[in-house]
Length: 131
Image (tube, rainbow, N blue to C red; front, side, top):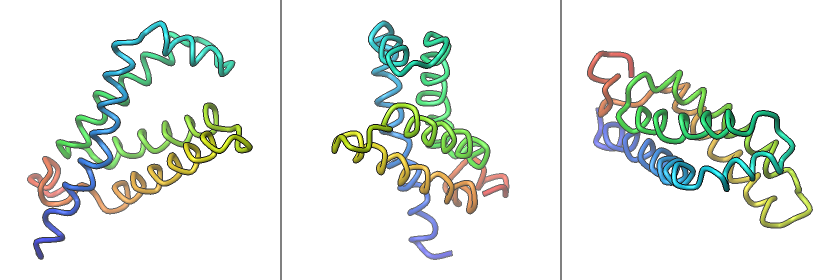
């Protein structure tokens, strides 16, 4: 196994996972603002949406970074990221929202690569042969 095959999957998991952690902890510190934002999108049960977002952006991101059960974790994160693009960044006439929509599609693509190819050798899954 080459050095790039060994280290790049970890770098990819970090580059995807750390921003999720940052935004997840931001949501933890801004419950009312986040719930209000979810409600403004017209989604039902914004408090439940907040809890789901925090779970995925904090817990699932940590699991992704550690490399534990990365395929199902990345799949859930990909679906969540695609859903946030559709429900929150759908004003494609607004340049900022269009950029966020496209970024979410790119993140979804990266997560689907993890679903397809696993977390790599430097992951908890890699230690058990599931990478």
